[in-house]
Image 1 (cartoon, rainbow, N blue to C red):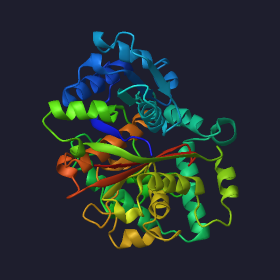
Image 2 (image 1 turned 60 degrees about the horizontal axis):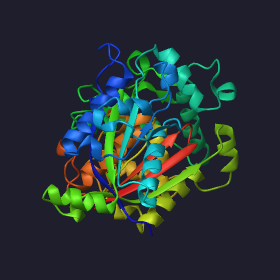
Image 3 (image 1 turned 30 degrees about the horizontal axis):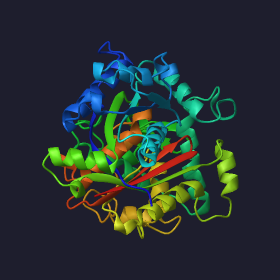
Length: 409
């Protein structure tokens, strides 16, 4: 069993901001997140030994690559800091986290900085939708298709409907829960927006259909945002806890992880899972791997979940893939209020991607930070009472890359 990796703390920018309208470069987003994380944790820049950046498509949205080098510009204490950038579509932040945790577990370093960042409001919605299409097999699934990803995740709902049946009112409840949760989160993009379950069930000009069964209310947000977290090996974490006047066992830590990759095209995924109980079996295996590594018996050992609701259909999938219900019966957890903020197992108390926002490369890091805030009782207005263990699920592409973390203390 590897030594645990501790989460010392972190910082999230306000996901409601539009950094392009502010006239600010993606480097400014990275700088604010890093400086915020340093201030929260009291860590000196010279103590950090390695930096990892998760980002999907800065070359498209911001005409900028080589993002790891921007960390060095944040503070003179970072001079010579080894850095790198990681990409796996919407799971880019989690891949950066996996790289950092692996280095800490291997003993290469004792303290790592991980930043997830995406600046998406630099282009029109149509152009941005085309850029997002590169997370699929662009030539086969996205080229010339208006808003390809709503259509791909609409097909995920269609596959559930074909195998098990799916009612749109269950998706509407998922949307309403995430918007309602976001109202509790002072950094959520939609914290002041209006969305009721009745509105999410409706259509027409105020909730237009984007593709297939996917309406505006079913979609995550186009978001500018950056999140930074500091991860530590046990030796550093113990010293840090002592100087902060706290105990090592009071700190959040990564208890387990899972990482699986499915075929890139949606058709290949569905063909592979034909006749199987789970629509996305590789996602299910990533969850099982994380539970096994964390020695979690089942989902009911968790206090809550931060999952990848890029669309309501992906959260619907996560419900049964995590094991809240038998395969195809996610509707039962929805109707019984299990996933609600005050339910037996809340999902996305932060508001998730639908409510809090979805800066693509930052989402996995944001999920881990929120999980750590929950288990240390520091989540403020969206704190789940008595939370001791949280899981995250971060998905890249149309269910292609699945990353799962179990966070506890």
